[in-house]
Image (cartoon, rainbow, N blue to C red):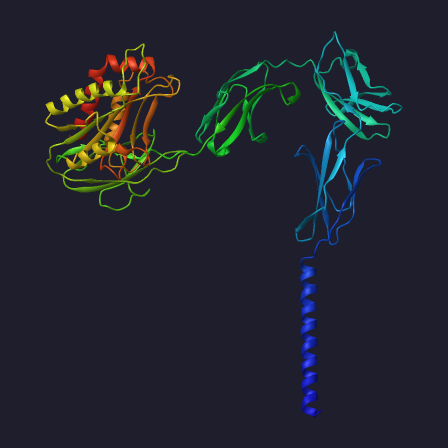
Length: 572
């Protein structure tokens, strides 16, 4: 081997050694900066002068977090830098099954859980739950023990304002305190149960010379209430002698929020931000005297919070496709308390656009774009209305129901949907024609495909299907009208027809009857933008409900006049 080759080998060896050393250095430095935690186990619960949880140490751990759970709910937690972890002040009732979870932590806060959780059945004595926590001059108070071990002695202390006022040693499963021991005190007395070694096992509270809190009743919300994601109004009554009230919100069984109210306040609005969509909640009110939570009175309700709704789209008061110059067009949304933004130059509206306050006068062709915003809802769809100033004779195609098999309420005298809706359509037709409108009618023996074909052939400006509704048991009431989607051309005329008709409906103050404008989303042929440019279908009340059917029959002329007038006013 030449000297030149030797030098190359030496240099290569040195380079290799440097690389290995550098890699080792990097590995060691990385381990130093972020030391890897070792596996560890929970060994047992030890009983000494207090309770300890013994674990095998985790390599590189600087601390351990302990969580004690009962039925998945955390009841105690502590932190220790020692693998013999003190559980000072852990108080558990006899017979409870506990789960101990331990997490090791290195100096950088990186954590690692024990390989297995530790299950333990608590078998130390504890006070039984008191049925009556009030003590009076006639009766003392008896405290009973669960898990009493024969042969063991216990110390029971009574405390008032954290000062011991009495102490006794017992060797049985109960102890009686006569009234005279606590006479002269007022408020909460705390009993503490100790072992002979003075290890605290259990506590319980009873009360002397304390006002009795009256029953409290939750008025709203109603039990089982289902509503969209929104604020929830809580009102209640009662709770005499309470110094304050607690509104508690339980989400899927877990306490998520507590609101404290003064005693004079008997209502509270839970902000929607406290709640989540599509969740079950339990809302309770507790009447509390001072902080004596064991002697509170409470009432509660289960409710369901649904989805966050979308603001109803903006509709216009007059038809855009042909309109007279100078017409003042109003904008509105069926959602109350909305802010409407709009543009008139064809640009997309934003929150920086014009805010609608007064009617918009149409003097020339114009493109109006708009959307609505409301609290606790998503913004509405953006709607475009192309206004054309021109004269045109209105063409309406009326399509009353052809359902001969759909019978109404017999007691009211309602026959079939086809018969009664054709009577109604005849009234609408007469009034429209009297006002110069060209009207076409469907043939009862035809079908929807034929109706749509004919309506398109005559170039109708409005295709109106007229039906009456039905439910499974005849109890449903109300009016509803369908368009294809929120941006349909028929939205505005349908909304105008609906709102005017509902204003004369006798059941308008009955909850659930304001069924509103609904979106067929392609499911109805006569309210489908793909089949007809401006189609809508109205359900004029429920013909299988006595009150609704009777209203239709006795007010046919008024209903027909109302629908015709809505069409005429919309088309100017």
